[in-house]
Length: 254
Image (cartoon, rainbow, N blue to C red):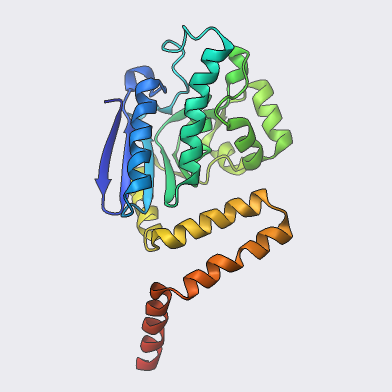
């Protein structure tokens, strides 16, 4: 299998295992990611999804140009790109946390992939580049829009137009990634992040993520108004009542 799935407490971990191809995305990788998404969407126990790459060289090097070389028409390109675009849309819409554990370089579609995650933690020494212009194409998996959202229009256009490759520190400063850690500490850093985030259940996680998406897509007044319904629903729920009771009991004991 090109994607290995591992259960770790409340998190589902996936590893793209094609180190000889620099963990490039092909149809088998797409199938593996779709299988992981099927589980995440149907099995409520998962509070986080983590994606990483095998080895230390690459997280995801992009789409596999060797495997996609026979796609010569616009229709064939649309079928391939549409499938991966749908995968990343499903990933972005998950009501659990998503974390890119970036073990190495990410180029082209690899950057498009990591941009669909809630949180992006990278090993020192990793390099990043939306380098599609080197092949006379634009991003096709939603990466152009997500890059503009992450780093701003002007900087995104320059990076895309120049096929810029940046190191982890510059990617951090720009907002492409969230954190840089020593390579030896990468996995434990992500595990610690998962443990903190997984303290919340999927009802709350989903409400927070849905609200954040509304804040981006709606007008400001409408987005603020839309916050009221999930707040009220959660307030009236059993888990809120339980946590308030625990808090009040602890204060009474003190």
